[in-house]
Length: 194
Image 1 (spheres, rainbow, N blue to C red):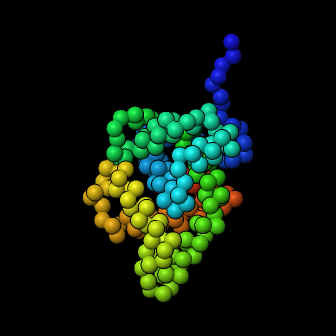
Image 2: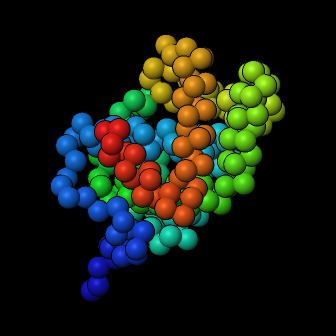
Image 3: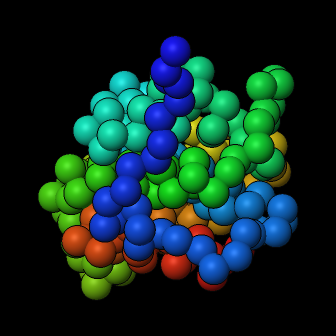
């Protein structure tokens, strides 16, 4: 009888995300939160859903770590700042690495849209106009703010201005994560912020 458990892929990108030591529980909580926020921004900007995330997992041979919608939901619920109805699980380092690769894969697929959003943001800043006055940015900010308020425990207590700044920062971050070494950038940012 053979085992059905798959091992994570051994690819140059996967190997780029190694750790010298296991993160502390507090660090893992911060990593979970950051990964969920970056995914939330990508969802709001590019309009992706769980199907696109699962398709990316399949394309990257990460089905062993993200098999289906339930697995994905549990990974997302591992964010300690999410409103939860149970199902919360511990995120392990392999799952974090998988999410990093999935996020960067999706960011690359939507790089043109991300670039357009960041270029619009720069243009609006040069013209001293509010970002939401550009349709693309306005739609993104509305989607991000609504999703954040719906999913996060502090969603009702955080000001719209703070949420807007967070969303804009995440859009800029996504541009970096869509680059050829985006997975390294995201991984290092997660470790630095944690």
